[in-house]
Amino acid sequence: MAIRPLPVPLMKDKVARVAVIGVTGAIGSAFSDCVMELFPAATLLAAGRTLPLRESKDNQTAPVCIGGLDLGDEDSIRDVCAQLVSGGMPDLVLVATGILHDGDAFPERSLKELDKGAMEHLLAVNLIGPSLIMKHLLPHVPRKGAFRMGVLSARVGSISDNQLGGWYSYRTSKAGLNMMIKGAAIELKRRNREAVLVGLHPGTVESALSDPFQRNVPSNKLFTPEHAAHRLIEVLLSRSAEQSGLCFDWAGKEIAP
Image (tube, rainbow, N blue to C red; front, side, top):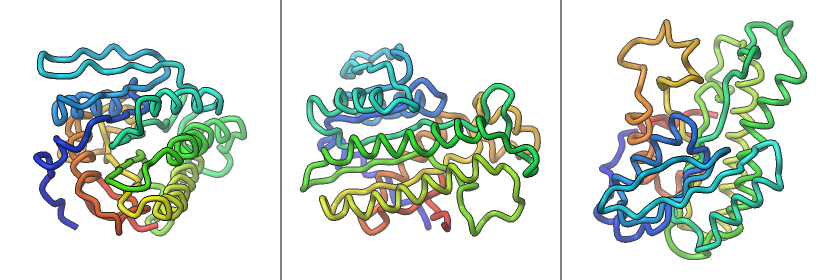
C-alpha cells in the first residue's frame, strides 16, 4: 500500500494540540522534533519519565513538558493523561513507549530462557502501559471531528509472520498490544466515526534499544530516529477511518495479524 502525500496544508490549520508520550526515548524525541517542524503553531505536549528539555524556534509555540510517567503505575498514567487533556483533547497523539531489553534481560532464544520477572516487566511496559494510556485518553476524544492516534508496535507482534520463533516475551507483548489497538479502535469508532487509531512499526532504528541487534541489519534498512519519525507521522496522517485498528509499517504497508 503506497503512502498518500502528507496532507500538511490541510492539517496545519486543523492540528492545534499534539501529544507525544514517551518523549525521552529516541523515537519519541524525534517525533517531537518532527511535530514542531510540521506544525509550528500547534501546542506540543511532551510527556515522559522525566521532564524533557525541548527548545522551540522563533516561529514555534513552546512545548508543554510533562514528567513523572511510570508505565507500571496506573495512577501515574492517569495523572499524565489528565494533564494532556486539561486544555482540550489533542488532535494528534503519538505513543512512543516500549522496551526490547532491559539490563541483563535480552530477547529469549529458547523457552528455557524464559524468566517470570523479565517477562512480566516487558508485558507491563509494552502492553499494559499503552493499554492504560488508551483507557485514560480515548474517553476524552470528541464525538465529532478528526482525531488520530498512533501507538508504536512491531512487526514481530504478527502471529502469522512469525517464522523464526524466539523473542517470546517481546513478541507476545506486541501481539497483545496489536489486539488491544484493534479492540480499542472498534470501541472508539462507536464514539467518533472519523477517529483513527493504529499501530505503527518503525523498522530497525538506530537507538539503545536496537543497538545489540544492528550487526546483521542492511545499511539501507537501519533508519535514523528522525527518518522513522517522519515516515510514521506520514503514515498516521494518511490513514483513513476504515483503516483504524490495523498496524502499519514505516512504508505504509499493513502488517498482517
